[in-house]
Length: 72
Ligand SMILES: [Zn+2]
Image 1 (cartoon, helix red, strand yellow):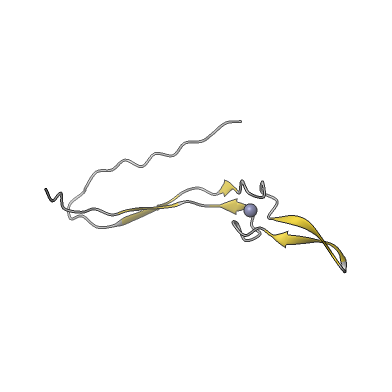
Image 2: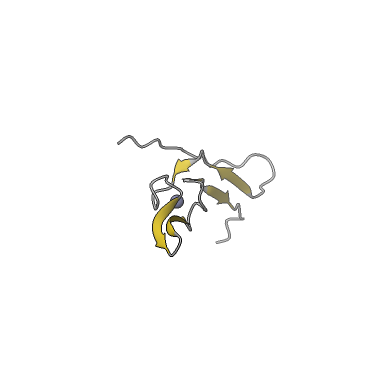
């Protein structure tokens, strides 16, 4: 299986400020993109929502960068 890698290059530009990057959507590995898990209930078979992707089948990564002075 191929893995698409995303790279964040760190370089201050002008005044430093905190930044956040959001990745492209990726398939949820916990439910393998199904969005949930089959369960048996008294009413019959049902689906339990995946707690990681909340039923969407996909997740995104939010990467936050905090710039700070280099205090020695
Ligand atoms: Zn999931």
